[in-house]
Length: 373
Image (cartoon, rainbow, N blue to C red):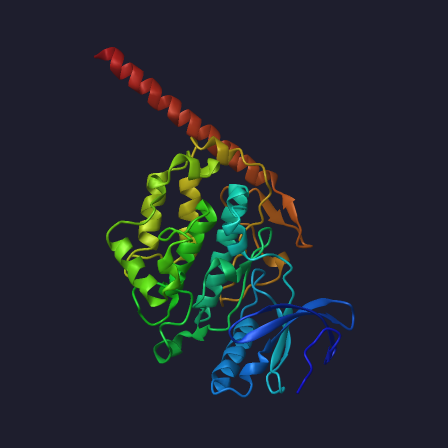
């Protein structure tokens, strides 16, 4: 059997250290012949001769196929693979960043600037949208599968599947509190529900339906039944019901009623959910960056724009990506670095000035009306 240990040679790579383990695979940090650092994901040894070996080999193969298909700056690049090896594996980009679940539980993510939190949402929305355009369903969208703050990555396509195979799989695979409560076959609408939960956590630092110490979250599919009941009964944590001490400062003056409406839609029944994740992210942004929310609009941090997808669903190089219009105040340079964008900042300043002018006009009209009574 192939030795998987520090110092072992796998093709042109030397294994450096064990990084993590999942249900189907284990990940090692490794170094290539040219000194480049990569990650290698192996099928777990105990699964090789198990009764479920075929299933787990297929998962590894599906992940390879997904990563081969999805060329996106917020999805790890895949370099090579050997699925016929005694320990099937593939080599991919090494992401040296913590997963968001750890940052959320420690209360660190919600302390990040609101522009940065929104950029995470927008970039992951772009990556997931690309998967859906290529008929790939992720099935396990959760904070633990998103790594990085400055540059977030959508990780772990091991239980992904082609949309055409959605009716031929176990509907109950995934992480219960991030699985849609409708118990339908996995599809893009289900992924969108899971992403809405994650977006809420990124913004507010908590799950919209469960407390993290709620015993029900460890009860598998019963948590999904509980989620459905709480949503149906309106017993989830709408943004307007978050008490002041728990509300992030940069959201206290946001349009919370509009955020209620956005997340009610995103977490609602299948026929009302967002199908355009980019629009979902833009609606959130518009509800936050209103003229009254001076804490958010005064945020001073450069934000990388969400990459634009090509017509065929592929994403080109950074040089080919155009910055979106709106309030984003940074753009990619040809080297992939973030640089300030004076034009975008001018647009933002103009928008704020217009909002102030409109507000003053309304006040003056109200005074005139009162005077004429």
